[in-house]
Amino acid sequence: MCSETGFAKLCVLVACAGMMLGCSDDDVAGNNNAEPDAGVQQDAYVGECQDDPVPVFGGDHQSLVNSLLFASGSEGFDLNGDGIVDNSMAALGALANSELGGSFDEGDIIIPFELFGLDDPTNDDCLNMAVYFGLWPPDQDFDGEPSGALVRRGGNDCNDYDPDILPAAAEVASDRVDNNCDGWADETLDASSQVVPPTDATDNDGDGYSLADGDCDDRSPGDWPDAPDWWDPATINPGQPEVCGDGLDNNCDGVADEGCDPYSSADGADERVMLDANSLTADDAEASIVFRSARIENGHLLAGPSLFSFALDTGGSPVDLRITRAMFEADVVDSTFGVYLENGVLGGILSGYDLDRAPNIASEIFGEEDNTLLDALIGPGGILLGLPTVGLCRERGGDDAPMEPITFCDENVDCGDTETYRCDKEVRAADIDVDGDGIELWLDLNMDGDDNVFRIDTCVDGDGTIYRDELDTDGTVLVHCTEATDDDGNLLFVDGFSIAILLSTTPVTLHGIVPRQ
Image 1 (cartoon, rainbow, N blue to C red):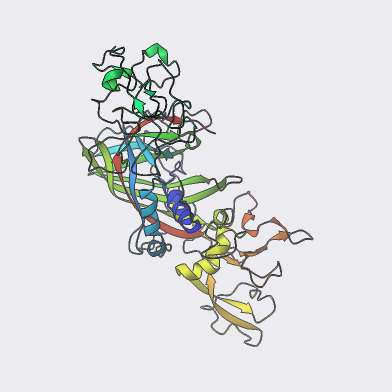
Image 2 (cartoon, rainbow, N blue to C red; image 1 turned 45 degrees about the vertical axis):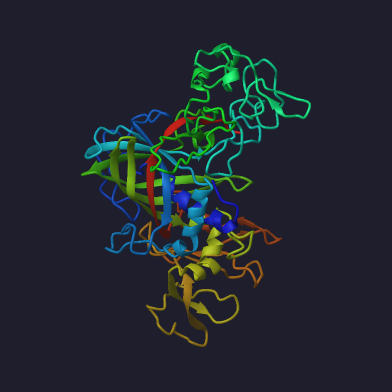
């Protein structure tokens, strides 16, 4: 799902994290809790469809994200109810939107949707949404050769369901199928290694084309016991149009899925997209990410607030990046090819706790490779992106510890004893108070003794309580300060940075599941 460069990975990480919608944080029917959930939004809307099943491929309408951009600072949601749009990560747009466009050009972002329980695209009081990872074009037979396409560095596989059929294979005599993807079945070579087309004029599959006419798959149904359900040799011949996304060479030109663009709505094609099983539950029965109790009012989809998570595979252990207080809205379009979304806006919060679990995969832009994403954003990345700051009274010199009790400069402009304390006006702070106890802070008090690396080691809760990393005798972090919990086991460092993402979708058909490797 991510492009090659680290910064492109950061762009896709944050964007895709914003896309991975999850379950409502209020499962009480009737939505009648007396208090708001945390300190940001009132309870999520809970409709009658809240607990309806959402089986894979069981949705009413399927679509694919075909445009994804970081929104400007004036676009997004008022996540904390102060009447102002919240989008502190807006500066990513100037740095990342071109990267995101390139990721779509390469097919690196494939995010399908399914809608469940949609009765009326104009007004509907309850529907559910499932979100998946997709692959385009996939290498679903794992032979190292993807099928051809306009995107994703397409290859020349002519059958993506049989690992023995690919351009490097040898032609097998008399099996009536194109083994080496040259567009011919059962051809031979002359003394000069030039192709000699087959002369067999038998039309074995009854489609009006023989091997001599250029039929590249003239088998009978029983000749390929492991065929996908949609394989029909009678619909594969030189007279057929290419079917986008089925992994087969429908028109016998030697390439499957050539000329196909799953993102385009202009070509009128309803492309078929395969799902990555890693975006499904363990039994593959449902999407691992479901957004419940959405609704449509006058053609406008509304959903959230919600809590969701995104498993980022960084080559080691997967990282679970959670986005809290997710809000989503979009215009619903009912077209000849299906229902899709326009003018979509997704907003939410990247919490301090979760950013401290995510690796810094943009180290060539800011920070060190072994830093977390929180280190990068509170340190050099925050400067680059212009993330919010507060003025905090801190000691002069030494480890620059904060004044205790915690004192902000706007409460004490000269920080009292100016010989001992100073006002540090560049302390990066969350812009959304999720738990309602005041904004949380993250500091580097240099507990690791490295003056050249910015690494969060001290956390200040909204109520002023200070927590520090727990280190072993070698200086290795045993427990991060962001992991602190209250007496009930609830995480304390849940405040974070607001983001907003613009998106649209186009109709597709979800066609199968690529198994886990």
